[in-house]
Image (cartoon, rainbow, N blue to C red; front, side, top):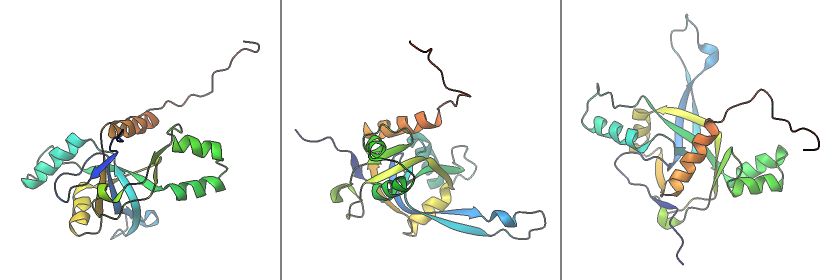
Length: 199
């Protein structure tokens, strides 16, 4: 039986997509130590994200793209920013986990989608990836989320700095989205429930 496709090629043009994996996304953060009323100019540091996945909904990305194509700078459909989640190679996450006492059982939870904080992506084959070189096993960390100005991201893509690589296919996209929103929708309790002894 043929395995269901997990990924499909990104498109070179057109709207960004929810579940699209990008490489070399550059985020610009203000240097906090220089923020003051007296500061004449702000300086920014570049944060390069080797891998990232788009979280923003497809419908919002599509409306934003159409508004940009029509040059409607007053459109309420333009997004201020798009939301992405940082991704690292699975090997990097495992190496960091080893240093922070994540044992093989916990890594197995990550690999099999039973760890609420992480999402594992299997290798992306050459034929499913726009640059035609493939991508290694990857892992998203739902705590590492960032926003970037939509126009800046499209500009990085047009300049060839940021690369569009692959998009999650349904139902893998919905699985990823549900896991992400479940993590960010969790409710912190002041204390855990306790069971009476002998129950």
